[in-house]
Image (cartoon, rainbow, N blue to C red):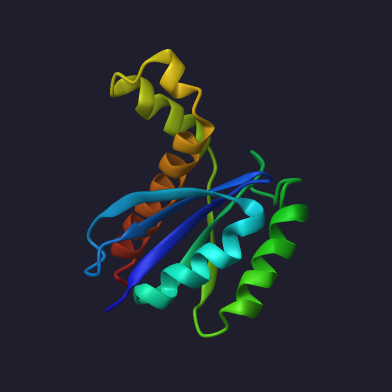
Length: 142
């Protein structure tokens, strides 16, 4: 069984998180510039078995695709083209950035450290992946 990799896709940066090989725990991995995402993921999957890539799907409060999908979709389509053997799925990411900020506050991270947008992106990717894992367990599909 291979890892699951999650991406919190942004215009400038992408947060990345992965599971352990047994898919029990999601862990923040890295933050990379969006322009270097495909190269980063390609290198990672050449070293680790990745069975699936989960990408945060930003939605409005009505559940519709948000405006940011207009720049996310082309980037993810390029990723799919570069790695055709790995399924890439979108998963609802509503409120993940807010949850990431809240988790930093709750864990005692100082105000200056909370300004690290890369850390927020990594935590958001971890939240996306944890939520995905929970949804699969709930639906008995893991």
